[in-house]
Length: 533
Image (cartoon, rainbow, N blue to C red; front, side):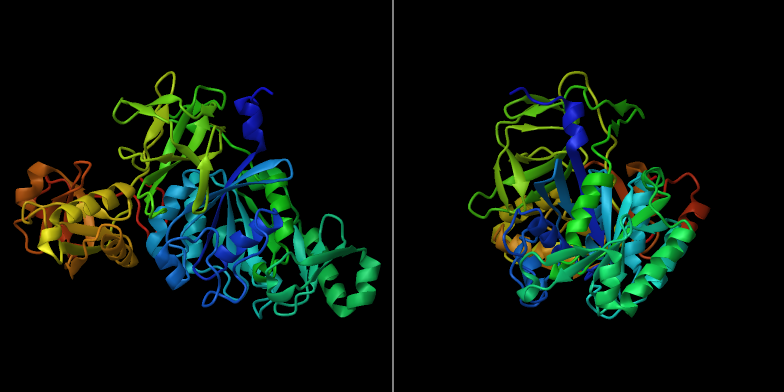
């Protein structure tokens, strides 16, 4: 049987991310999606975070210990006629840079809201990142099995704060905390859910016509039907073009921990989410899906398998057909890159991959020279726009607790910098044994300390530094900048010079006294969620 064409294969791909504020239930939803897709037999989230089994997508030891997602992982599975490429993302705001990298690799997103909390701070930042990248969003209101806000109130908040018109595809029957099932708005039918022990297996569901639902549920059904009619009368119905233009967001109601409403979400992703789309190169040209092979690395991860100690570079196939063993070109260096060892990834588990198409996520093993944002290609040269680093806001000086572990310390610092776990900065003021570490959020330092001790056998000391922000500058401006107290010029591994400042007013003073000096904000900050400049 011949391989499908890149265009044909791309039409079957649904490459999407699940994004949310911490504790909205993202890992639980991921498990429930896999359960409904019949990829796993039993969900791990059966007793809440404190006592749950390790989820498929949360594999790092710190993730299991703390009950949060702090790294991204890729999961591929089939549903109906679609190939689903689900890229899970960190749930904690301190790892929003990793989430941003993931959002460069997907064609749509599922935004998860907590029914009791609505739109939280991290949720809004993620909405803005999706908007800046032109990523259409399906909104899932989760935890409807617990007390929460009213459904209409949640829709009002979504529209008022995001500007997206919410168009529910299902409507809850029963208030938050008393969830009977959903009214399917396209048919008017009632979908009744039946609990299973602990919510660890597929929830039973039964479809019934409106008159039967009214006899069974009485006032709860009447209220749901009246609210559905109110929404229809005011035009809150799905419009596919508006969804793809990011003018509206389809809305579903679920209780992921009980596996209620999750099957609807899979069907909606297959039916409505965009297929793999052409990517735009640095020249603002759209790379056709049937062009020769190209891919962009969006994540480098190590420590996934202690027995192998290898590194895995996640890359999204942008065009063409990839075959294992192909020799491709690394755009950044111009050197050839062999692809003998390539895996498809399912959380921590992986297997050898033979072929991949636009929209697929491939795992390149022992890709020591690859960094997030790098382009790989065959045929005519192409380069996709780089993935900018976030502006760091937290700074520490690192040093090895045991000076005899210097080589391990250096190797660990270099690898974590390449992976994008932390920014490692060097200064003429400091020796190579005491680099500056820069992070978006303080929990990144916890990850660095954990990995340095457990992966590189080089425990580290982290000493606070007084800096609060970083601006791009030039090497020749360092002497002038460092005349002011509380300022230090450092250099990233890519050669970029950064001025670290302890007070935003220092920027104003330096520019006033030395207008010839370059002090340029780094384009993307975690506080605004704005697109990189």
